[in-house]
Amino acid sequence: MENITTWVSENALDWGIKIGIAIAIFLIGKIIARMLSNLLQKAMARAGTDAILVGFIGNITYAILLVAVVLAAVDSLGVNVTSLMAIVAAAGLAVGLALKDSLGNFAAGVMIIIFRPFKIGDFITAGGTAGVVDEIGLFSTMMHTGDNQRVIVPNSSIIGGNIINTSALPTRRVDLVFGIGYDDNIGKARDIIMAVMEADERILKDPAATVMVGELADSSVNLNVRPWVNTGDYWAVRWDLLEKIKLKFDEAGISIPYPQQDVYMHEVKAAS
Image 1: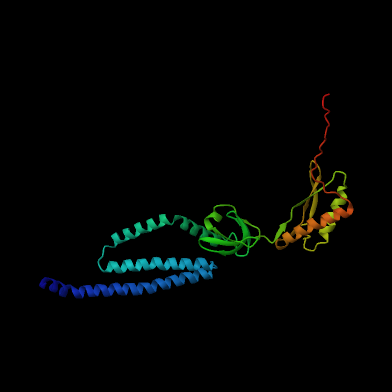
Image 2: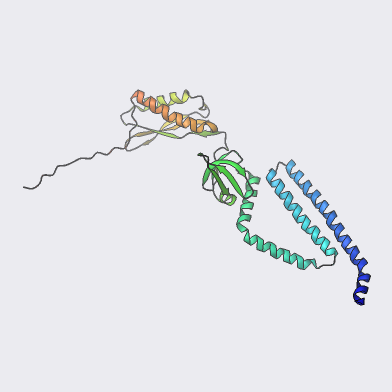
């Protein structure tokens, strides 16, 4: 007991100084880590980086710096930091393997935020889903479909396939096909279609709309109709053209053929 008391009295001051230095390193290092993290976030915000990515990278930077501060504080106590770092690295590897799918989604989310193949409000087809983008997260993207269903798509599924962004460009071409009979007048049918399109103010003058013979099919002459519209008017114009051109064809006596099959019945007399 006397030996213990002697050891404590001889080393108490030394350990007190070490603990005080460790606490000072931790407190000061924590303040510096927060300052550096805030400076990085401000620099990224000024550069126009997405707010989601700014916050996430800021938090990750602060966590890494804080770990370094803790290791420095522990090292000041005379603890073998190398062994501690090996344990932390092994734990990090185990967690990384367990969360590899989540980390893949996270990496894909960072790519989406950085490269911006689409933005909130765009109509896209990606990850096997077509819909309007509601939210872009670091792990998944939320969309709603045309019939108003919420779909949550993992970011890795989006980055791993083709992305069709319907809203990316300001104009879009409407592709329609109208079949008329072989006995109908092609020039008359073309004039009717052009008149319907010229009467619709939503159809752009430049590029000019076109009507051309696209195919001599089995039962019809197919006319390809190609007007250009603003992207937001695409579906409304498409539906209106289908209805109006059909009605005008009916008025002009132009037929829209459909496949027919003739069946001939032969009467077989029974043998007498």
